[in-house]
Length: 236
Image (spheres, helix red, strand yellow):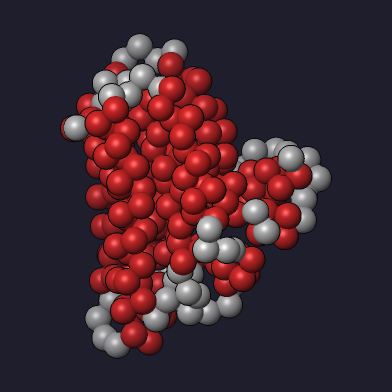
């Protein structure tokens, strides 16, 4: 439970009392999907009582971003800047890691947020989409934590040092309870493919453009994976 508490203190803004040692979570990063269940349920609860579908979709979009303190969303903005930067790898890394947000970051944030909102709005069950999207997105973070070689020191470098190659398999097992939700089997199967495919695709791209992975890229993968999963639930 201390490891889970450390995980939630890292991934959310929930007031959980005394700060736990970060190493407790770092040694158990396969627990990432657990945070998805917690954040998904906390956002889904108030959304359930909103009768208007447009407002509910907007509240769901805002809720999943804000409950993490926009930490992962910030990674998406930085990743967008890195992708759009002109020049060699050094310039791309500089755009990825500096404090400023450019046109590339703003574009990435707008596009992913619009796709997420439209996915929630079109989903047969916004509540189920919230939970599946959050859990699947957290799995993608665990995937990159284990398999993404860091190109610089930082939080990702620290987490990667403790991760083991089998951690994503444990994370996948933690996602199995999603079958209990009122979501069609084909939609869940598509979501499972997406939560593996997104980080698997972004990993070689990050290696080629930046020389590896950092926390911003992991956060961006979370946001992209969630939007893709919610869209899949709406469309498949």
